[in-house]
Image (tube, rainbow, N blue to C red; front, side, top):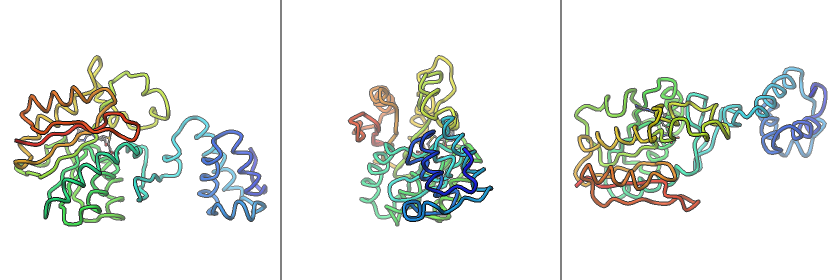
Length: 279
Ligand SMILES: C[S@@+](CC[C@H](N)C(=O)[O-])C[C@H]1O[C@@H](n2cnc3c(N)ncnc32)[C@H](O)[C@@H]1O
């Protein structure tokens, strides 16, 4: 594709032959600094050679399966736009369930302390901080690169969120919370899904525990095991998990003396979050 000198409308048509039409539109808008309205009303607006070259490389990467969010550096979660880089998982709409369940519980408390384990881009911690303005929210992640993204997102949307580096509860010695939430890595290592739908471009440490022959639940086990020491009495632990893991997560919570254990379904009717209350 040689879009230099050609109009943005022609570039959109050409790109749409190679990638999804909406993705093509969003890339052109980003590269050329134009709006959807400009594309329709002024399709003859020329691309500079630099814009044409950048667009060509982004279209080629998208055609190669790289997720759009990594190409634009942006993704939406609920009503907020977040910075994303290949160091963080791209926000998934299913995670709204985890946030809604957590917000419902936190909003019943005056000044809840909330912990988000495996915060990644920070979407869960930051959205909860905005939904519960009196909450003290902490996010933890062991990836310094992910935490840098979370910090940039927090600065923009919820500067009071505290972000700590470490292995699950390691940076939280002696601290207790009213609510612990997590969307941990839970895909079984070696699952063929990890090879599809853009997943090879996402950080593998965000998707899977990396344990060959495991059941994908090593991170969930660590989180459940450590929860009692960091939850107040009656505090909730809410964990997002895979489509077939609800029963096993319930059993883990039961084995660790949690009460009121149950699972909740996402928009697709799939058990997606399981939680329990510290007795
Ligand atoms: C599935 S991603 C969730 C990211 C974000 N909370 C979301 O919902 O989009 C899991 C996150 O857990 C982090 N993680 C994995 N193992 C960890 C560990 N042992 N300690 C702390 N964070 C960990 C990964 O770096 C990744 O950011």
